[in-house]
Image (cartoon, rainbow, N blue to C red; front, side, top):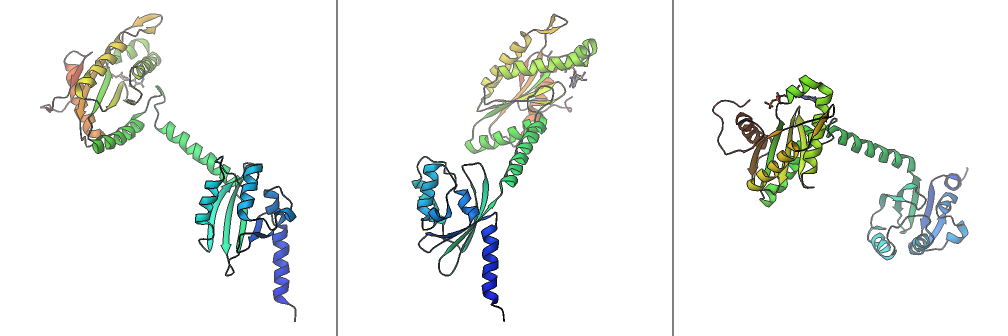
Length: 315
Ligand SMILES: Nc1nc2c(ncn2[C@@H]2O[C@H](COP(=O)(O)OP(=O)(O)OP(=O)(O)O)[C@@H](O)[C@H]2O)c(=O)[nH]1
């Protein structure tokens, strides 16, 4: 009868010894009593020098020589204090660590009845890099999805997202917010006379001038066509009208050159101010009514929504 249990142990020992994954066992006093060559490699230390070392001493060795598990803080104490709160608290535990050499490992810890702790370290660097690339691609794509290709300001989708987030804040702190719709005056004739490409340049020019006259925490978006919108957080109606008028004058006085000839671009504004606005749609509707009135009053002006709705649908 073969000694099955013995051959199993030998078999497992051989596999673990040759494994590319790091294996180690710590005693109940947290001293290293076994490790395979792959584990010793991670700490760039011979097995004979690792055996008998306590976990704390191993971590201090890593920190002092910048090998093995990476410890970001200049002081190793808080890291060790943290590990004491989680180590050996559960029978099985999984977590990820990065090493000083840039590799990432998935660590599994398992406690047995004698309170000995087996550690397995699996290299997940490739997986981690793929995940990081994926995350960065998602970030880039979501930025592209929220940016207007022509003017590089937020597009309708991106702008609405920012406005909804800002409105949440305004409702929480009960602060006023102002919203303005800006529409180029008589833009169609520019397109018709000089062509769509020149029209595009005019839109870029307007977006640049408007952006440069906003505070860093205001938001500009291109809603569509020749219509832009700005969201002015924590802004009462009087200041909102002032800001819009300043922008209107800035655009009017910034020459846009077509075939070396300055062409004056003008904007009409519809503005609304709210504390507790229900959402983008409400602000848009009110500002649009005011914008329609600005166009009817001869364009190139700022009109504030006065709370009255039009008798017939606007535009
Ligand atoms: N070049 C260019 N033109 C665009 C773009 N999107 C919309 N337009 C044009 O913008 C013009 C918008 O005209 P309207 O807003 O209807 O009229 P308007 O001439 O500006 O007159 P008012 O708004 O009444 O002052 C149309 O000619 C559209 O074709 C774009 O991306 N590029």
